[in-house]
Length: 53
Image (cartoon, rainbow, N blue to C red):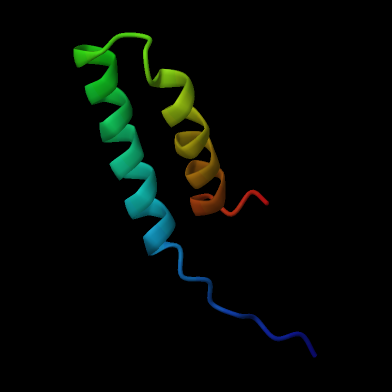
């Protein structure tokens, strides 16, 4: 018998939207200075929120 565990992904979605907003803000205000530092967090939290890995 398999058991299913409920995964709480709300925190991952919250962090994804927060870093996406930060990414958009950095794009408008400081183009190309901090984008390479923010983009890995956006991609990582999107993958975790979608439960891809």
